[in-house]
Image 1 (spheres, rainbow, N blue to C red):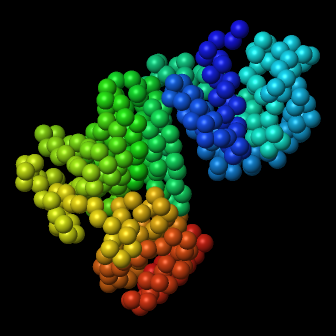
Image 2 (image 1 turned 180 degrees about the horizontal axis):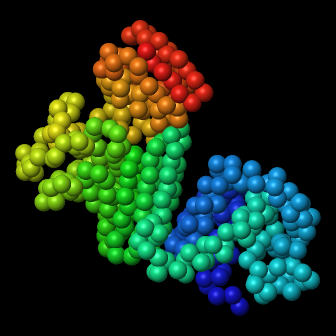
Image 3 (image 1 turned 30 degrees about the vertical axis):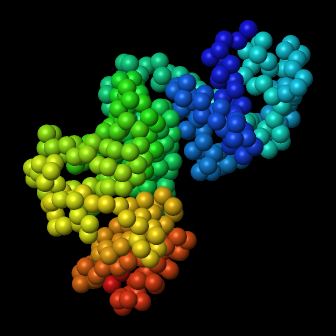
Length: 382
């Protein structure tokens, strides 16, 4: 008889293939989520395979493995048994009794997904197992798992504790996979991310950034901390978070629901008592002051600017063209150069969802005349 862990893994591969082929029911998706919560070691495999499938890397590998794929498809009955007709020891069929991990007959579409998963698993299992076994002996820098989102892309990742993170373009999230979710849940962020943290009062979740550390037990919030921007921000959607200033370890600020904190990146953070922290209702005051303000939707568009990117909206409100240029560079994945210095401090408000870079620039031209030259991987504004 298979042990419980083996049975759980069997069902994991079954449910993952259903999810990727878009055939999983809500109940099956919930079951998959539960298996992942109870088996953290499965997360790296699930994340890797899902990302490869979604980004098309898997599809690119189909051609090079075409012959082997045809072999798998031709002999699929040797690998699968029917859901309602299990024959543990029938011929060459793989079953629980002889160590197989596939328990049901897949539809044709799901069969294709699963076959590709088999190829990926065979190609990566040895590396993965070696990594898991040798984690304890690796130096600290080699125990770090990194999720990197390039300009022009956005990524969603599920961490080993079940917390979900959406990474904006040009962002990087690091965590030590050998210690994460043991006593603490710690990650480091450079860029922007929207967190939906799984509640666990015994294991606080901590985000380390350049200017602040953010401690939560379980809540939803957005953190923006790009190294090339003047301001770092944390915007709280629900619950509460504790913000500790990096260069003032004794300075802790508690954010409540629908509040955000803004801190200067380049200047030393001044010492400010909690009851004297500026809680502004207008735009942030000049750097380097710490500003805590209420999150409010734009009255005309009903958009909360701090999280508009999670809704696939390129949104900016009363921002300089210099800052907007950085936004567009990450959003569209093209280098933006403003050759005319006088244009950098012109302020704009805009909301775009499906427009191209050329369409956005053409809109901005309507309020202030400028020219631009669009190349394959760059744009020059002059």
